[in-house]
Length: 235
Ligand code: APR
Image 1 (cartoon, rainbow, N blue to C red):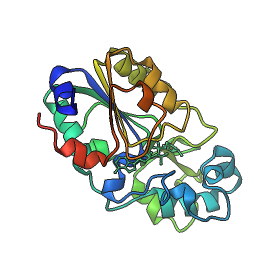
Image 2: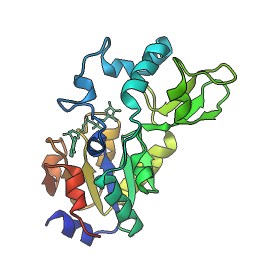
Image 3: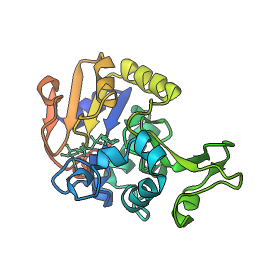
Image 4: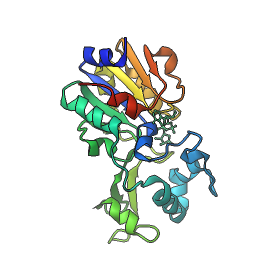
């Protein structure tokens, strides 16, 4: 059965995605050959994105973060837009994403579980005051709150726990799904990658350029561009 038939047949679809969903918006992913983790830096990128590095070297952290993780100007692509349309038409119940770019919400998706947070949400570590992304972008170095505390992005760094309510919502949506579509992710990072194990439905779809660990248990595997693949779906 092809992707169109599987989507036609189901109405509690959940999409589980990663950085590969945003590459067609011009945002590089992490582990592809041209991805973030294959570029040269003074420190390993996964170290720079850890909480201990943030605490030890905030200036270096924010330099890397502003340079590589804030992708101003990126717009939702066909994949984001189609997923939002599927939700509007009552076919898709949730998007569970590892991305922090906010593009699913910008595309119109309403029920989005951002497992790794969002660059759009920032908060003072001392008084809790919220700040927009501009406060991070405009700061010449470490961004400080009026109270003197550091403004930290609401992004889950390595060594940090995921948000409890996001975990709860994502797991419940996946458990209740009648079709799980996994797309644009290498499933290399835990605990995010483990969320797909809560799925109890019959059909599993993987849409990913490269092979993933989920391919072998999928009923349909499409090794191609996710934007193009979803754009071809009619709802
Ligand atoms: N269409 C389909 N698949 C694509 C496309 C595309 N246009 N572009 C890239 N891909 C695939 C790649 O083949 C790759 O398997 O998307 C996957 C992206 O994998 P990663 O770069 O590992 O990104 P992701 O799975 O989201 O990483 C998870 O790692 O460092 C952490 O917190 C970070 O959330 C991130 C997590």
